Amino acid sequence: MIKNFLLLLALSSTFVAAAQITFTRADYDLQPGDTVFSRILNPDSIAVPEVGEDMIWDYTAVDFEQQAGNIEDIGTHPDFPTANIVEMVNIRFIGDISQETHFIERLDDDGHKVLGREVFPRPFSIVNITGGTARDSFEFLAGVCVYEEPLYEVKFPLNYADTFSSSFTLNTPFTLSLPILSYDKAPSLQRAYLSYQYDVAGWGELTLPNPLVGGGQKTFEALLLKRSLTRVDSFFINNEPAPPLLLSFFFQEQGQISQTTTYTFWVKGLNRSALSMIVNETTGQVIAASMSRNVNNFITTSTKFIDKPIAVSAFPNPTSDYLQLSFEKESSQPWRFTLFNSQGQVVQQQSLWDAPGNVITTIELLGDLPSGNYFFLLENEEGLGVASQKIVLKR
Image (cartoon, rainbow, N blue to C red; front, side, top):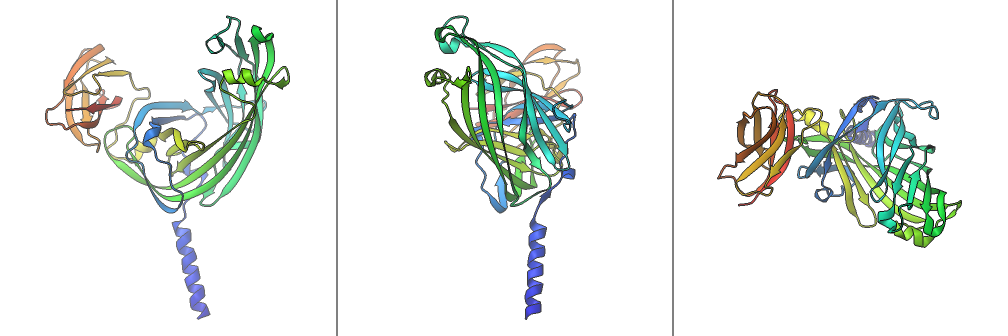
């Protein structure tokens, strides 16, 4: 009896181990110097994922908005001797004000992690916020911030139920000029305390649509990494806490707390998470979401795109019977227009024989197409996608 019990226990353990998914460095298709392409998603089309074991996550109905790319540049920094990636972005500070920021990163067998950041000087007028004089302004100052603990994009190996954490203080120095308060390039600082809790909160099957149009979908084995952030912001002017009334002009307050949760799905063979979203924990709403463009590499009906898709205008949209397309055509060879329905099926195609240059052409939509959401794809003479866009047909 005891032997039988031990045998059943061993078989049960083997089954659980087989069901488990492990994500390692070999599964992460990123190298320093790569360009990481993403499709930005309409956050209203994303549902917050459930967590747990053997889950089914179906995101085939997500609404694509635009394509974006960021370069994980090979790079080093004197303040970060182990760094091998420098990622250059603009980070929003307040309102429309943003600052050039270089994230200093390390990719190795332990994980992909941010070690710190460097920020750069930039002046801004704030008259539109204060309603004061032309001298109302502030200027970002240069600075380097070394994180006390790394901020992980992903940690290796990743297994269900793994947990880890990190925390650090982020300083953003600037000067403030407000003559009405006798501030003349007053030394100022935003100080943020960030505390991250990581939980590998689920494993199961993730189904995604083709992010480049062309039809098809794919189901992946996936791990769900949940990263919870609690952030506390404080503001100082002349080494003293900033006046509450002044902060209210910028829709800020002293010691304000914000909480967000980032969900990332990790599947093998991609150079970023397959799908990610950020949730505002106060409202419970998804506020940002994106998907790896390279999901299309696993879908046989997908269309490859040029690195920088062209701008195309489609009017009217919504439409009832035709589209007027405006775009820049780069060759004399015919291009192709393809229309897909919401299931990714081709419902209309035609060649575009326009001469190179600025093209304005009219597409008469087939009369038997029902009302609904559609996508069109423009392909060049090599069969590469140059642009795609969602349209709404109302009849």
